[in-house]
Length: 157
Ligand SMILES: [Zn+2]
Image 1 (cartoon, rainbow, N blue to C red):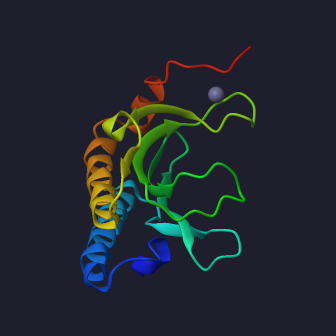
Image 2 (cartoon, protein in one colour; image 1 turned 180 degrees about the vertical axis):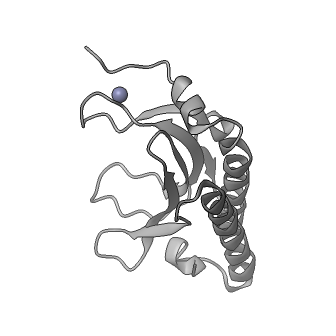
């Protein structure tokens, strides 16, 4: 992944190290995907009409559980085109909700109890690699059905 895609203002001397950290995050997520028997790795979404990504993320989805990790820019709405800093990093394990399409799922575990904020691209990219390492190390500690049992929330009325 080209680092300027996520960090358009990145200094030339930081490009290689940021690229390495993003590649490491991608490799860790890809390794987990292979062990789960699914396809997946880091991908990015462009922001509005800009040639930049607003987020770099990976989502590995099984029927019973999903494993996600990502690097984001906090935005108030779709017209907010800031590219950071700060950058937010997170990883989470979610189970799908049986009730209604309005609920996207319930979180049963999260890296560092939520998203972390960084003011430096290299720190953010390395944090994403660390979050993917956490995800790869945690995902297989439970069976998919076991993760599902950890969900204590219900959207049933
Ligand atoms: Zn729900």
